[in-house]
Amino acid sequence: MQRVAEGSAAAYGVLVRRHAERYLALASRLSVDHGMAEEAVQDAFAKLWQQPHRFDARKARFTTWFYRVVANRCFDLRRKRRPEPLPEGFDQADDGPTAEDRLVERDRARLLGAALDALPERQRLAVTLCYLEGLSNAEAAAVLDVHVKALESLLTRARGGLRKRLGADRAVLLAPLAKDA
Image 1 (cartoon, rainbow, N blue to C red):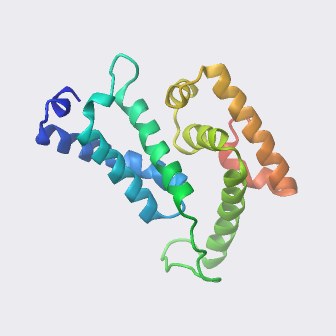
Image 2: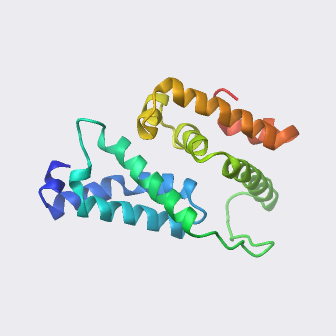
């Protein structure tokens, strides 16, 4: 990161290649579509190139700090535009799972996604970082700039909110979040 701050385009290229996939996965979970996720990651990396001095290695690891930069950009883009719904019955061709498996998974993802979207932003980000991105509580707390106990409180409130919103189907729908659900 020091070489990027000194203006090394080669170091910047290495940094982007090394981390782009990780941050695109995060942005995809926080965005309404893949295009928005790509835009968020591109914007975040462009901002990093233009203002590398914004990163302070004394305060956080690069990966932790950049998770927050990407997440903030995703939230900014979500606020600026609302997605157009896909046509009813839209389904991409896939030679993997059966049609029934895809329908079940799509319904599960839709219901869980809607429940996640209904959560307050910080709770949604806490769930995304811990359960979908696989960060430890300490890493997620650093991204959110809160103490671990505060993160655990966010996760507890988020799980409670998800339980309420998902009702009787919650056991099946919350299986990916089974850590403490």
